[in-house]
Amino acid sequence: MGIINVTPDSFSDGGLYLSAQQAIAHAKHLIDEGADILDIGGESTRPGSQQVSIDEELNRVIPVLEALTDSQIPLSVDTSKPEVMKQAIAAGAFMINDVNALRSPGALEAVAPHAQVQICLMHMQGTPRNMQENPQYKDIVHEVKDFLQQHIQAAKSAGIAKDRLVIDPGFGFGKTLQHNFTLLNQLDQLTSLGVPLLAGLSRKSMLGAVTGNSAADRIHESIAAALLAVVKGAKIVRVHDVKATKEALAVYTAMKNCVTQEIHSTASNRN
Ligand code: 7PM
Image (cartoon, rainbow, N blue to C red):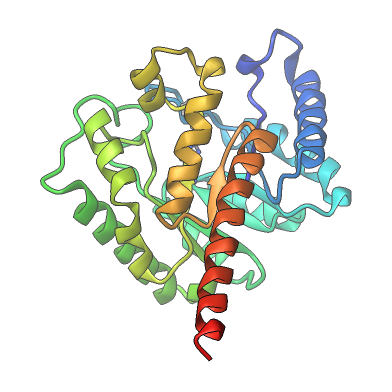
């Protein structure tokens, strides 16, 4: 899953139109790099960040979504707002990626009727504004797992089939460095929930804490983290650097296929 941000502050100074044009160009670049899904976000969830209005988020996201529907790639929209969910689905979104796990009033109802739309439920302790102030857990893995289990159940109760769901432990969302690395190390514990696992580690500060590199310079760290997440059971990785990540994962796939063949040939050699 390639990341497309449509946030004017993340670009030089060109206003909304230019931000949209740059986002569309970047999306086409990530498609050329081999992205399987694009995740379009119009609201920064950076720690301490302010919320944007519904209209502002719609103005950022919908034109980019509309410009990309012809490209055939499945499009995900990163939003917690029910109205943005509805309009994104009407404009052709294939997935709603909600860092708030459909907890906003009206969110369950916004997505439930659309049986073709996938939903990513992510764990977050607190809100983007306050989540990094003092994250606390007795047992990070169990608490994240319980949360995801509860919100899978809430989705099911609202009429959302389980096969529409994807779950995500929310690296960096209300977690210390220790919490984040414990979660990564024990990511496989979440696979028993029976829902495909998505992991977003790309360029995150937990990786910068290891190497000291700044966000734009965390590509090698991000590839290592994406690979580890996949080895531990992630089915989707949300990344900035699509080509590099795919090439790294291709080596893992080659190894796994080879191991499988070895098992088969060993079995047939016995006959
Ligand atoms: C600043 C800090 C800007 C953090 C952006 C971010 C995830 C996500 C994000 C994730 C899912 C980023 C984050 N992270 N959605 N949206 N999982 N499902 O690093 O980990 O891109 S925003």
